[in-house]
Length: 156
Image 1 (tube, rainbow, N blue to C red):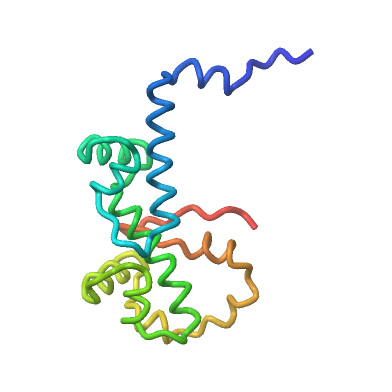
Image 2: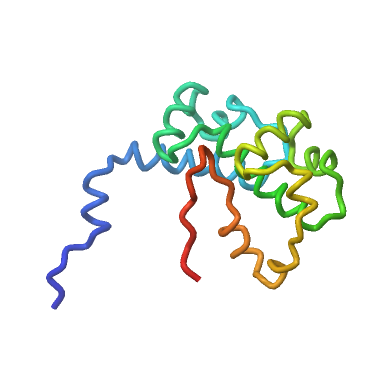
């Protein structure tokens, strides 16, 4: 007979049904960003998907995920841009538009901030050594980070 308490039951006792519902709504908006990153998405549209007011949504999203909705969306866009740039068959401008950015200057600035090099330099770099790495592993290992903080990578 197991005497260890169920950790899920303990957690469920500390989270109210309202908080669980809020997390489900936030996940709906986060999933929308993951799926539709190339569409024009703004906080009001994301808040609508989460069934919240824009201000409440922004506060709740940051509290739950540790970054603003805009920062999360841009990270998704930069991740996808890195994959497209590694292929090498699209120009930086084409990649910028393909991932949903409308300003090449803003895209380049954010890319450089998160990746540490310009999109042009990243595209020109040799990416063949990583070609044998499965895409899911490459995505995890090359996830952009902000403020120079390394994003923890899963062990192989």
